[in-house]
Image (tube, rainbow, N blue to C red; front, side, top):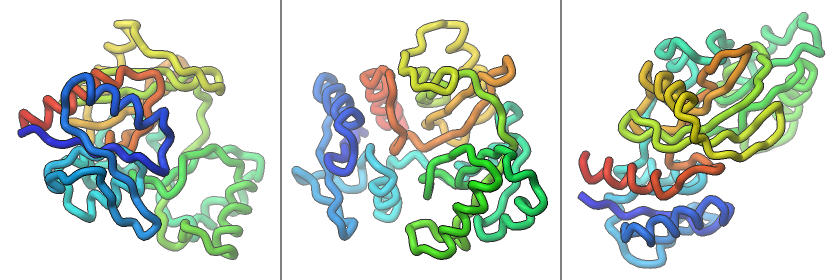
Length: 262
């Protein structure tokens, strides 16, 4: 069955939404613009079947779509760092400390404050983006969160902490029905570099990583080159993942075909 794409039109960069709108128009796929007001309510530019929808936009949109029971949010309880560690043999961060932010005191105690670590939320639809911090920066950040009211509740947000590893290059791959559809480098030697991946050997290496295990047949897989090896950094839901120098037309076609064949 053909589904309607819902592309977020506000609170998202045009560089994210417009390529999807252009590809959908060129491929004659049904789509609608959806905006979110400050109360969290949807507003569509025309009437659609609210159940048979493929949403693309911000984390806020996708969280709301999950609450509304939209069928084509490609997410489940396998989008968690502890599940990836247990299920995928080639994760970059395969040794994790898992706890709430408030309970990380035991981890930071008696450690060198200059030591670098990588921290990110345990679940997808992140409360914050993954980042490299020193132990001192982590301590100071947790203290601020505990004393200043923000959207991040340190007593409820579970995080993963892992040893810092040097990364030479990073790629994002869109995977549909278990197959790499398009890939783009997005960082090289610590600096942004947006470059579509066309090297067949590199794409085959990414496909080999996808073949080991995926949290969902439709997902986004970020890969790093670290210490001469390609490793998976993380998986994300397709519906809220940013595009770099990707072939958006190929993404739209693959996802639309996948939904029609479900």
